[in-house]
Image (cartoon, helix red, strand yellow):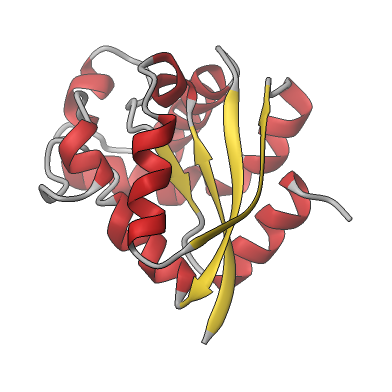
Length: 165
């Protein structure tokens, strides 16, 4: 089934000059870049992209990767704040990507959230230099290069936010 999804290359991907290499991975997987733009994300935009309602899920994901987290919601709020700081530190590249089964194809090419455990052959597995446990210890966001919508509902909402009209 043809789908469209959102991919955002985060500030570390731009800082490390990985734009071309990352886009090539998606294109080699049979996906098409339909639209893109580089932008500096402000506080209003990042709060819409990462709303406070995401705290529980982020905290639970971190709890699985790191011992010592007893309150996933409180930890999730810390993760959200760190993500917002990370996303707003420099420009990002937002892309609207389409293709057959695009959402899962993008996620497969991107790799698992934690670069340390992402499979080799994925963007995060090959280019990632950070880990969830290290970033948690250092009280900052995990620099994992790419944001990719997780499902069709998320993709629809995120595409409307990043590519209005």
